[in-house]
Image 1: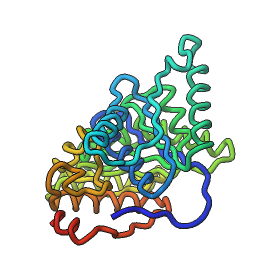
Image 2 (image 1 turned 135 degrees about the vertical axis):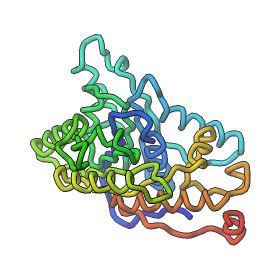
Image 3 (image 1 turned 45 degrees about the horizontal axis):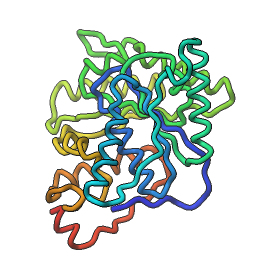
Length: 290
């Protein structure tokens, strides 16, 4: 499969992947979104704001190295690993904010989409990125431990009792946008690493997210299951939306690869990016995926 865009001009759209808790799959989601857009023929700039972990940056570096190794053009974004020090942080947050804003505005002149991966903690660059987001994707592992960044829960009834710190920050960022005359951020909460089996905890978490979605005006989307293939993609910089044949993967594709692609297609559809999925696999590629 590949992705084709519908006709019509568009301005640069900023997609932010954010959550103040580490280990939620932000870099994986950011990479998949960026590659899907590239496959759609879009010009994409990517920003990694986590100067310490640099998971998104390493993912892209791995992709570049693997593409060279197999002698194939996998498609690369115009990537920036942004460190506050690059913005003369010694002069304070204002200089860093101005530097990031200038870098994103410059990238927007040459690109259709900007994808930003944020750190798993609060900070002024994180807050700035959220205020810039046309679309915000928040991956959330399917547990009350991770739900805690969004809302608080009554321990007896599991009913939602209020919004938590990250949700409050997002609401503040949305308010800043609307105060500047911009459209409100389209917020998508992605239930990530879903269990394959129904469980009491899965049902309670789902009900709590649905209740909070009504309060905070976000859309809840089922995301990626816990699959080994997503871990295997990282060292080679691959994604589920790449053309996954034996020469690209370095091994025969499996049904897990096909299912991972379907999950990512569902996420991309939910983002309303006007992407149309076209099936252009050859019979041989279909046999490899079987």
